[in-house]
Image (cartoon, rainbow, N blue to C red):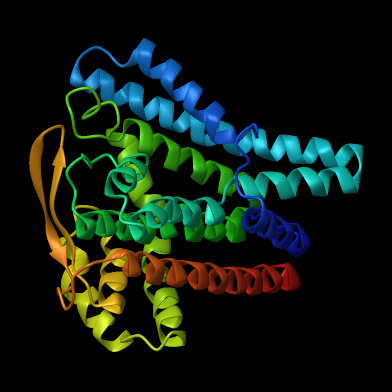
Length: 321
């Protein structure tokens, strides 16, 4: 069943995220999702590989379905009290599924010290957002890590939630947020999570599949607006997106690499060990802090383009239902 989303609630939820983002002491749903995952992980991530896979799949289903049902129930209950109260709750829940403001702020937290030549501070800030070791990174490597984070999370933190709002309103957007949170916490290829997090990793791949490919067109429009080489970027996308270890991450990252005429990927260090990820794009110039600024502009405009497209879809769906 399609959950029709009120265009007013959608607009206000989007604007709330753009203006306010995630206040530090705000009771964000992801915090509670994380506590549930951590509790379950501590008690049930044990046994044979097959048993761990089953337990991990069960956790994923419980959290995703539970997030959908709980969100629908909260909004429905709030609307029973009053239409205005219901609208406020829906707006806040919609805004909490988006990461537009926080993503750009994350980029700025690295950008500001990098511009000032404070490499140690920039490395430390980047370490908050990536799992690779950052202690010895050069300016170019710091910029690369930041651009990769901005590009990939444009899909996961902005476009995908908007996409699921169109299909199923706040409940489905929150269910997607549960998938994303599971992926960030247990979808690692190491001894502890190789089996336990397998289903969560697959669920994240499935959930982001269409939005990741939609991002190619949206970033192309943003690049066209800024008079960047869109044709060249599409060539890079066709050539390099499939080389990314994620079935989805290569789409926005290769497009950004092409639009900015830079090369992403390469060697990263995890827990003291060097891991090579296939390069995307051509190194037409060395990465600097300016590339973070340019990427932020693409992400910001891409966010607003996504908003307009999804709003148009919501209005259309509401008009025919």
